[in-house]
Every structure is written in C-alpha cells, then in structure tokens.
Image (cartoon, rainbow, N blue to C red):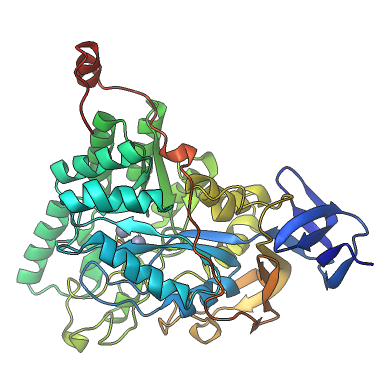
Length: 486
Ligand code: URP
Ligand code: ZN
Ligand code: ZN
C-alpha cells in the first residue's frame, strides 16, 4: 500500500521556513506531505541533493516581436524546454501590443501560441504601446480580469515608448483595476541624441550602444517614473535595473514610503560593457540597458542582498547572431539596427547558484527568494508556486550542488545559437526538474509533452496594492470632495 503517487526520498529540502533532510510526498501534482519514511508508487532518490522550489522567471521574451519588430528566436516550446533544463518551472513572458494593435487580438494570439507548445506553466504580462480608449477602457480591464495582472511600458524605443500623459493613463488603469506596472526606464532623448551624433561621425560598432545608454539615462527615467507613480499612487516595478544610481533612486523612493520595486538580471551581475567592446561580436552582448562595469555589478549584488531589488529575472531576449536577429545588414549593421537583448533563461539560476550562493554572496534562502518565491508573491501566484509547502504545486528543482559544468552554447536548449556566458565553469546544476509532480527533466533528458504547460491566471498581489500615500494636490482634491475619476 503506497500513500503517494511519488516520493522524493531523503533530499535536503528547502521548505517555507526551514531547510531539513526529509521526504516529499506528491499526489495529484501537489505536495501532500513532508516527513520521514513516506512511501510512494514511484520513488526518486534525492540523497545528497538540494530540493528547491522550481524557479520562476518573470521577465522573458518568447515568440515575441521586439520593439524594433524582429521576431525573437525562441517559440514557446524551445523557451520553455530551455527554462526547464535550467531549473525554471514557471515563466511569465510578455504579450506585446505594438502601435496600432488591438490588445484583445494580440492576447488571443499569444494564448494560441503558448497553449500548444509550452512544457512548463506560464502566465503573461502585457506590453502596452497603444493606450487608446479600447485598450484602456475595454481590453485592459478584461485582460486583468482574466488573470493578467501586470503590464510593461517603455520610456524608450522609438516604436514603443509612451509619453508622460500616456503613462499616467496607463497608471490610472493599473491602479483602478489592480495590476502592477512594470517599467523599462531609460531616458529616450539622451540615448537617441547621442546615437544620432555618433552615427553621423561614423561610429556604428556595437560598443557605441553602451555609450549611448548612459547610466544617467537610467537614473533620470527612474526618478521621473517615480514622480509620475507618486502622483497616481501607483505601484511600479522597474525592470532590468543596471546601475548604482538607478538602485539608489529606488531606495530613496521606498524610504519615502512609495511602492517602488526593482528587478535585475544576470547580464548586470556577470557581464560588463567590455564584453560589448569586441567588434561585431559585441552585438551578442548588447541589451538595453547595457552591461556596465565592476562597480555596477557590485551595486546590483548589494541591491539584491538588501532588498532594493525584489527579483532576479533573465530578460531572456534571444536573437541569433545573423540576419534574422543581431545582424539584419550583416557586417554593415549599426548598433541602432541590432536586435536588443541577450539569452539567459536556462543559465539564470545556475549562474546565481554558482556565483551567488556557493561563493557566499547570497544565502540559500536569498537564492530561492530571488529566483522563485518573490516572483510568485509579486505576480500573484503564491503559494501555488514558489514554495515547498503542503498544497503547493510540486514544481521542484533537485540540485546537485557539486556538479561542475562547462558552459557552451551547444549544451543549452534555446534557439539563440550562442550564449554570452560561454567558457565559464559553474558549480551546481538542477539535475532533475518536476512540474506539477511530473519529472520533466532528469539527468539531461526531457520527458515533457508539447503543450503540457498550463496558463496561470494570477491574483492581485500585495505588490500591486497602492501605498495609500497622496501627493498634496491629490489630498487637496480629496478634501474638496472632487476625487479624480480613474
Ligand atoms: O535589450 C533588451 N532588454 N531587450 C528586450 C526588450 C526589453 O527591453 O526588455
Ligand atoms: Zn525592457
Ligand atoms: Zn525585457
């Protein structure tokens, strides 16, 4: 007589409040028991291994047209397989509206693409680039009601950016309907003015990308979006923060009681602008914002450690190093024409495990929080995801903390065809990965049917609750009993 469908035997299990050696009993895809001597129809030996919540990557671009209209190299199958091999069992990519698009049509399209291909569970964020009346008054409330409780806006990129009034419109909608606003914060004018001058002078190599996206452009945009968010009392999360100045702006806002969260990514911890300074090949390291310098890396580690940065995501934006992605005009491609973004879905967690946890920069709990739990909490899927606890989905990554891995593009499962981290030696690897109790990756082999991943309708999270702080002018309106209609 067995009690559970599956028992994971004798691993060092990171539960919600303690790390201890125990068995995990799984039934119906959920965690049913944590204890000793459990018996299951099937048993998986995890002795000597760490059993952690599956990772959640809340910032990745999958089967999406970029800000410049380039289709990324991964579809929902290749991206979700790549995620699974890297220990990530939930992804939240973007459903991207471009100017002129109907949000409802775009969203239906993303659902169709993901439903038949994803091998892990997924949610969606929206990208709002066309905040017209149909989007704000009809499609956005409907999308939020269907469990898509976060959306991203851009302050830069010619074809995506919103001006301040549009941003306030989107903030009003987010606040009204209970969604979290994610912001790509870079000052567009500074970047495009510098780029224009540099190109005119014939400076077109990838390395000039890192010059144009100045540190100050990030800090200015964060300060401006914070001011707009303060006016609206609208919670925001600044994505892919890369600089000490940007992180400081977030800290300052939070110290003033504002609901401002931040995210950073592997490229800001493990790459620098020097990686871009290698001729045309530098295009493989170009993303926005760009990797910075050692001081910037240190600031990001510190931000992750002290909570100024809430989550660590990949910003996986895979484009091949050829005419379909990075080099639309071959060797003549200028830095303004390259697709922006780097791949990182599969290596996000192994990099942080090896260089963050094993090297003592982060505790095991911090590693789990930054790679999984806080994503679930921030985006409204906790405690279904992001925790090892009774009743939670059995989304688990079993890590061999001693496995040494030499990184190469060939060992990865995305379609970018290269990795910015090639040649590195990492320690620790997620050797077995479970999604809702099914072993989908084991010892380098995939066992997951296309389309087994399920859409996650997300709840409103605490992160999207307004802080309740009014600027004096709004307080005055309230006093006059003439509140703004959102
Ligand atoms: O360069 C990047 N990060 N590309 C992806 C699009 C975005 O801004 O997130
Ligand atoms: Zn962005
Ligand atoms: Zn992104």
